[in-house]
Image (cartoon, rainbow, N blue to C red; front, side):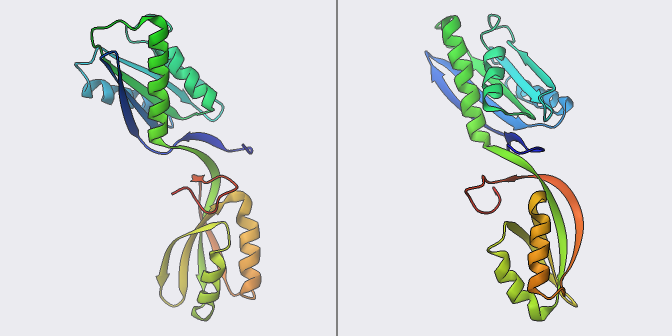
Length: 219
């Protein structure tokens, strides 16, 4: 990944599976602070108060500066550590995973537990959708009515998302693009309109864009 980008999950989601009568439910969520991670863990624990175990793992910070995990009563090294290893191997940060287990009466053994918690983490992350967050900008564009059709058509071939359009004295369009593409987009639209288009940067943010071999954002 390029400098400033990081890989995480796009949304909160879950998936589950059953092995030897034990039910494993994997939850994953994007989090930006340790407080958010702890709040997410608390919410799952409250939801599954009757579960045998609620194990967790989370990594916070673009440089993975904070890593925490818990076996929650499972044999040491069989739950939290395998879960965090999955996140590390996938290069995920700003993510929290909780795996809830309802014991089914059949012991899985240390190896079985490692596989079960690893698999539960994998399916949770898959359900939550892995994305690459890229530095982006949101800008307001003011376009004369006579040029809007030309600009609107050109936008379809540029790496930009048109979020909204409003009509008043002129056409005002809110555009979102990767920061690294901003200058090129502004230059091309300025040239297209003979400098009759005006731009105002309104926000700088991270946004989940698709990979380079795909077009448009990951919506």
